Image (cartoon, rainbow, N blue to C red; front, side, top):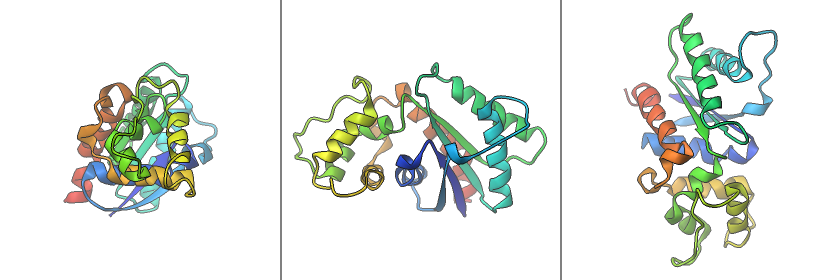
Length: 201
């Protein structure tokens, strides 16, 4: 039982697959692909819908039982990218047997989902229990905030992607108090609805 996990860049390559397993509450085999390395040509629709359809075909061909895709909102309007991703999923399902596919849009970046669990951040970075972890939705740029915390931590010598993976490994979804605003809860719900039945059957 293997899940193809697609994230918005190499920074997410360790943490996102771990986070998917945390949401599923079980260990499962995963492979990470970078959203930006996917090339699609001569197709109709938005780039997001086209990439979802392409990745779904590739996941089927490679024998994956499920697919999880997370993109960063960045400067787009909230949920615009998510709507386009879902449109691609629905278009694929009009012509093919459904492949369990969870879709997420991190507002503004994937790092905000990790920053939202202050306990996991402190434990993973070996920070004192009273260390201040900035509010995930009040910090101007969560990616830089988390990078700064990592640089000042006991695991600063690790690659950033590995440090983020350590946070994801300790993350408890219920502790993410801003999950509605960041898009995490919507993604977690999609993972449970789409992927759990395929993995846990």
